[in-house]
Length: 369
Image (cartoon, rainbow, N blue to C red; front, side):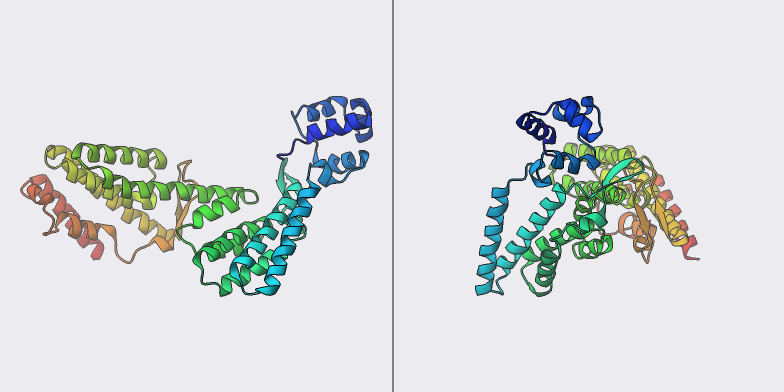
């Protein structure tokens, strides 16, 4: 609750000339509990909200400080929008504004309701069935859904989707929320992380972890572009590799592919001045490529794999991550033996490079047999 309900109780008690002891006795609690509420060091349990409102002969809206004048103002605004829609029934902007206003009003009513909470394993949470019982969500759902079916305005469609996802999540229709988010794969993790936060904490945390790994991958692609000299490029690669190591704690899973690419980039940066370090980085690129292929084999056998790091432990990789071809053949042909790539040509006479190429060729051939 964001409302200073304790302050409201104190004002009402003073208004009626009631002592803390008398209020406590009427509610069946201790005077210390009332004192704690009024000092905003705690909130009344949900079961006491209605008795408190009844004691002071007010509504729950008034107890929560809901401004009735503001409520009337919003009602007037809805009426104006409906009058405008009666004249211009196909105006998408008006429809969206009305649906959004109805959605926000319903969401406020949910937040002010004292009946939506339930205790699960000693933790008080919102009950989706009780949220669904709060009247007012049906009409915005209908309007948003109609707009999604008819509108060609991408901005309206996205905003309708965003609000519908939150609403469906709030009333317990998680599958519908996910189905809508699937239409925006680039925003899916963000949309569901936010929408599931209240009702589906573990799923929200999983999408949060997806956002973390997505952000890391974006960093690994974009940061090197802005490093204009070799010293800064080297530092960027080192920091990114450290960050991957910190987040994944050695259990890279499918993300071996990104780490392999980073080591390849790191080797190219080191090549001019530090051949030994460059070769060591190239070996690392190979090792992570090989580990990726092992990871993909595990997915094929098991159907899915997970991660052990606290930052990725809720993420599961399934068969959608399994490519038709493995990574090492690409590493061999597009990195080690690419005749158009001038970077590694200066290593071609190094026996370590020759040995690495032969090792990868043998492993690729063995896999093909």
